[in-house]
Length: 385
Image 1 (cartoon, rainbow, N blue to C red):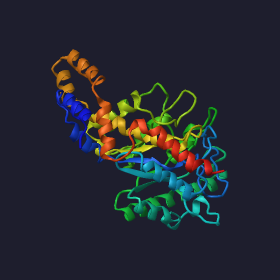
Image 2: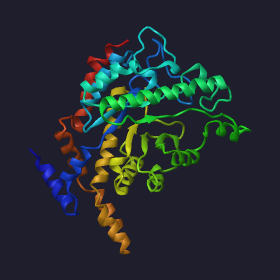
Image 3: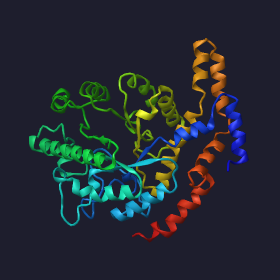
Image 4: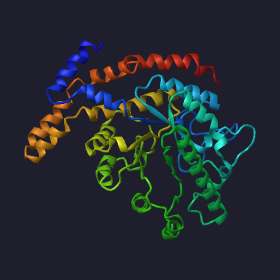
């Protein structure tokens, strides 16, 4: 039963030509790919003491409750899935396979190491995405993997990449939905190098602009990671250009800070603008939204929950925009009307529409989050060493 507050909000949006029910229905068809590595600080499970190292990335903090086994990680993800609304996928790194007591190097991973994840995903009604793991390895310590001038090291990582492609293809076949394979490498020098061209010629590796051209020529999908741009850059500005040429794009939604990247996603201006551009471009359904943040300074389950819900919130905010009316104002030269309508959106009862979406998905309301996450921490997470 719809609440009185939602009925009021629905009427307010109707006055500007927005159908809130249609927006909620569309929102409930857009999957967000939740990254597994928030739960254990990007450690993976290749060895009992696996932890993040190298690759120019780090996790800050030591909040208690980190998942130390695959079973614990899956339990935490299941808790997250019970709190976040809408359809979701789970994104795995190659270092999260089930390897047992045997050490399996990156160039030896096989489909069988991810059968357990496939079974779990089917049981939990989620699809999987996949990532090669080109960091936290002795053969990545010098700063280069696929672009390494050491042929032995380069061939090792080429084989790893080939195996991730096979595993991703198998996952896609098993679940009846394409498995998006993300290939991110840490290659680069801390200081200026005299042979930029040499490294780039080895792999065709390099800057953001280089990758844009490479994917356009090679029929590959470009990934834009919001955490990898300068804090003053706006990724939404890039989307309107890229989506003129690419029908699909992978987004890794994160929050950069001046000293670091990969902070928990918030319902902030940049996240909202990215969501708006996806909706305005007409490419929302063909773009792939993934999350990529890791914060060990706070409750990890809470970080997952807030980051995921914030992205979903931003999508709803964008879907509640009267885009056609704004465009009409702009095209008829009525710039003031476009500005005034945009400002009007800031005082509409968005929160009531969001609350209705939460109710329809049978997940906790915003005011219930702290207690829900806190209870899981007290009952489950604090029992971990």
